[in-house]
Image 1 (cartoon, rainbow, N blue to C red):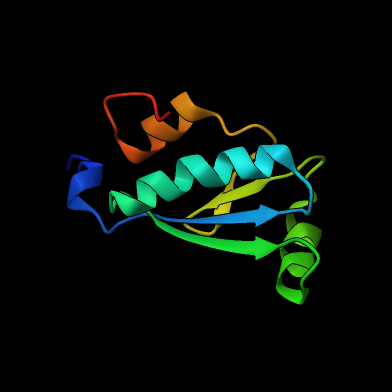
Image 2 (cartoon, rainbow, N blue to C red):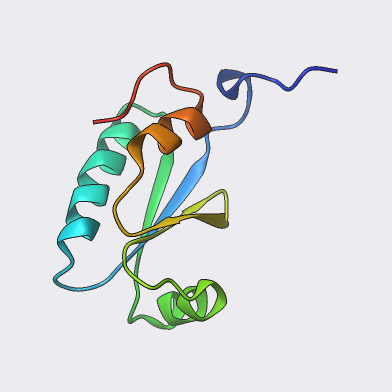
Length: 96
């Protein structure tokens, strides 16, 4: 049995955990918001200092923000890896 292409699956959910004053968070949000506007992902954002954010941070213990979860699983921390994201989403191009 072959793995279905990303287009055949449900739209992936990305959760972006951010910290105040984080320029990498702002950059990641800009890129991910564009993908959400194109309906390629469902984007949720969580402040790291909120009760929900503290729970997620305690579970994943990122050394730097933003923390990015793809369908609830750890994807990255720090600068958003655009090529890795494109590959995970099944896109044929890097995300800007």
